[in-house]
Image (cartoon, rainbow, N blue to C red; front, side, top):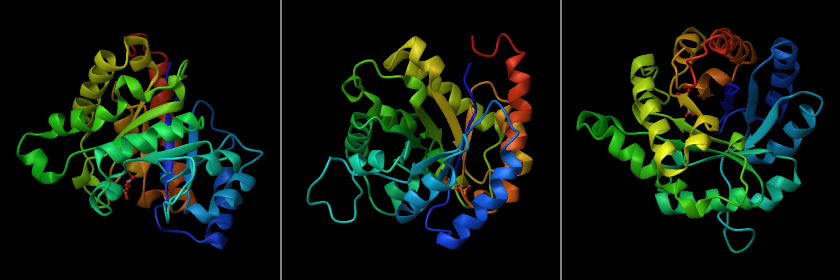
Amino acid sequence: MRTPLIAANWKMNLGAADAQKFISAFVPKVEGIRGVQVLLAPQAPLLPQLVSAVKSTPIQVAAQNCGADKSGAYTGDVSPVLLHELGVKWVILGHSERRHVFGETDSLIQARLKAALKETLSAILCVGETLEERKKGETLKVVARQLGALQSGTWVEGYDFKNFAVAYEPVWAIGTGETATPAQAQEVHHFIRGWLTENVGEGEAQVIRIQYGGSVKPDSAEALMSEKDVDGLLVGSASLKPEVFAEIVQNAVKSGSDWKNDKDRFK
Ligand code: PGA
């Protein structure tokens, strides 16, 4: 049974006062919702504030990136050791903006992932094709190349794969208002599950959550989550307003409770 993982990626939005207001409005709206794991990823300087603000709730805090080493001359990076020390549980890696705006390569992203796992941070690895790559029919090839970060040398001994997720985020759907259809998402998620089965392990592939991201809104959340291999959502712009993000969490779990009765779902 995979618990739905719904994450808010605030990107370079929401200041200290906004974040506090968000928490005050959001927590009461989601407090009663069961069977879902919720993450909030603020800008890095707000991480300690958020960790403290959600301390008495099941909500966990995620960083939007982390350094590829414990310490050293890496101006602008944040050490995974420090994140762990601050009580940050998760880190988002390989986001399309990191790849396409900041030029992060597959090998750098893999190094960041390895460093994060060593410090026992849970990680979300983002993958996804550009519009041009989709048009050329290269979606699955691109996703497979990006999943290469998960080769055998990446994992630490005895790793608990509940602490790892892949987010499929087609670049053409991010911040564009154009969501992938549930069928388009399922096709790639199914491919990712198959890739994980072959390259990471059969049991592992059943435990790893695969999130969809790209213009998710409350209206699209339920249908996306109803797909067999969609186990969560990574939400950007619609996560900035507490009432909208709370509705997404609520809608995601609506379909989640359906899956629990579907014995075939995880076959
Ligand atoms: P979006 O962003 O929901 O604004 O499209 C998603 C993401 O980049 O994680």
